[in-house]
Length: 627
Ligand SMILES: Nc1nc2c(ncn2[C@@H]2O[C@H](COP(=O)(O)OP(=O)(O)OP(=O)(O)O)[C@@H](O)[C@H]2O)c(=O)[nH]1
Ligand SMILES: [Mg+2]
Image (tube, rainbow, N blue to C red; front, side):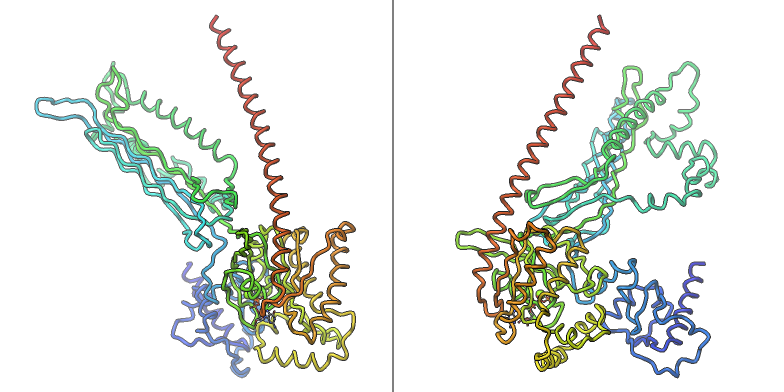
């Protein structure tokens, strides 16, 4: 049925594409059904250009009754724009994947968010064995215990910068079974996964748990009786099966356990009670441990190579000597190993830096980073050159260091996933200082404002930036210069750009713009426009800052430093101001951390005192009972 549905869907897709005025044509020989089934393939193929989205002439549009669907109809769950490309802005569901596609299309291998299933290994089974030797026909039991299953461990690593190497599922190996002659099994090896500093690990519900509400039928299956009935098992068989989940029995033992001669004690029942009690304790301990979902923050205070166990391996089973008593001299059973812990986790990498560079595409962020640090990011005169965050270290003469993060350019509407979206803003989230990089020579918006071009939208701006080649941009710039006479004297493009940045940051995380900040007015070497722009920008920016931050802001005026990153002019001034702000921030943070630690210690002290009192009371009660 599933197959039939897919074929139907494929036909629908095929007809839709045929009847659509902007039909797709495939430049290879995959069947349409195959293409439809593999939506991710379509995406990738389109990104790499193996699918032509060329416009077919409208006379191919001969199937008019099938053409009643809107041009933005959803194909494989995506809204399409008029050009047949996925419209990433259309619906929230597509957003995350949309960004992923865009980045993958440009050969990105930096990963800052992933989901992983971790499972500890199962314990090895205990062994049922007896000593046998010449002249010793009935030796003592000598089955070894099983080894503990391996655990999954996350290790904080200074050398990792991406979550690229974190797998989707990680299962540690199981413990080795015990053997005869009291040979205990080896424990499974722990699985160590390295995660970069800055990773936040959160436990999430398993997919099965999420679906639990629709599982009336599954509940039936959970019912053991029903399960066995469906398997057509007899009662004894079902019992045996159940028992074999927990017990390793000596061959041909099953029947003799149920039919004991009169007067004989069933030691197996006794052993079962012991194990059940132990199981109960283990379950209770596990439940107590997993009461709160796991949240780990591998931050800058974490030491390199510190380890966190995220999925514990199951304990090994007991060999038959474990059940040896003065009465029961030949226990013919051993237990199986316990199951390992399983967890679903999400890993989110928030790069740790002292300062984060925020700016529109092409503002010169990467050029600035190159000018101040030892980093060599890609620099080019087109937007979205930088696709991954890039960290550079600014070295001062007294070996003080400041880490600066360069992130992809933000544009208006990034919170609606325009451009590269704004998911990468998680990388400035942890920066202590925000450094806005503004192109002080920018004049693009001037013409629009003056002539009152009404059809301008954030989307059209994106398209402009994305599709227009460099030549177009230059032409535009020329026109702007020609029209400079008509410029409104109170309009400042750099100021508008800065407001876009502030709005986008606020849309991403309210309150983010309240961080200590400074502005770099880059490209100050373009002397035709920069000085005039700078003057106006300084005035408007200050007013805006006071407006946004309230009256107190005038005291902490935002610093605006004109620089030329390309020609390395006025760089020292920026780095010294940056250092001042970072130092103040670090000192404040240190005080806060210290007071938090003290508070925690006090709380722990109180708790310890409470526990001690309780212990004393219990002891007292016990003693008075005895008397
Ligand atoms: N004249 C001049 N040009 C500059 C200056 N700084 C950067 N540029 C130019 O601006 C263009 C863009 O520079 P990038 O550093 O790649 O800009 P970006 O902000 O990193 O851009 P994205 O990575 O796309 O967000 C390049 O052609 C640089 O040469 C400057 O101070 N003066
Ligand atoms: Mg860049």
